[in-house]
Length: 217
Length: 183
Image 1 (tube, rainbow over the protein chains, first blue to last red):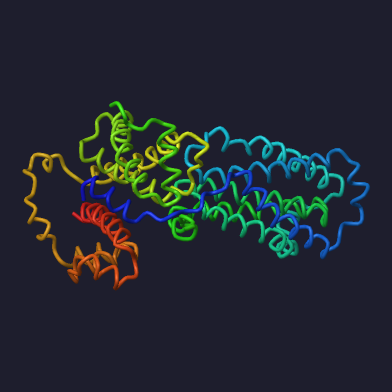
Image 2: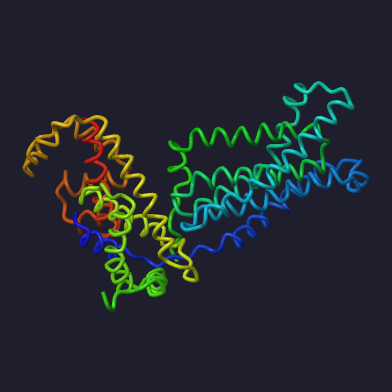
């Protein structure tokens, strides 16, 4: 088929489409879905009794703040990755809060292991926490996956990585309201493990699973 | 050329196309095609004419599918240019994969006559067709194997004539790639 005939076919096939909202507006929608769900699950599980004094500790607040910043920037980057023409440096923005979050988490965890003489490996593979983590992280991850589908196909892989990171970080914020630091390594492994699986299977499965499609008006 | 749409006009034409204006869409794609060709040549100076045309056609298809992601408040050409660069990488990678399997003598052979397409053995062709995505496979089956008209195929499949034409075009590109790999 020559290019002129292809253009005629595309023009014949034209249907009105609903424009994709800006990444910022879609991020607000994602938060509007995810934050209340995470909050309800936190309330249902019961807030940790030592939360009020913990909220006065700078390291705890810093860790929560970095996790929240990671959730926001990674959520924005995931949604912006599906918009062609978004500058690459903007898509790399989550790396800064992610580095700070992981550093604060690592320091906090090492301190807890040292002070409480907890077996680090037992902490890493605590199976009791997995259902809790799955509950907190599932809705943010699923909502993000649905939103990624509305972007352009070329951005699916970075969008998936950033989207799962955003869900991870938001789940961590909720988890820290329920659970002590000991659970955080498990949430990291569980959620980042899913990121690794998504990344490995991405070239095969994602184009079909998350195949973006134009939203007909 | 005087009178050709510039950046802001591309944005306005695409905004109208998003609302379903076919005249604006045709004008946009026809004006955009030489711009895409020039961009592709700039990024891939050693490409053959057919490679550039493949990149342009793939870009037009991708623009069609991603048109809802364009924000009329933002410049059009960076948006289209990003899509073109992705398609350029795809076409180059496909070409490199084919190139690794071919020997130089192939370039010295005369171009096959159009009828030579029919010389591909039936099992290989059937396997290649079976590897197509469902929509493209259905287009090939209805239009080529059952030799239906576009209207008949549209009525049988429930797709528009335009969608069938696009699916057929993509199927032919994919089949060419698959049969190239099989040789």
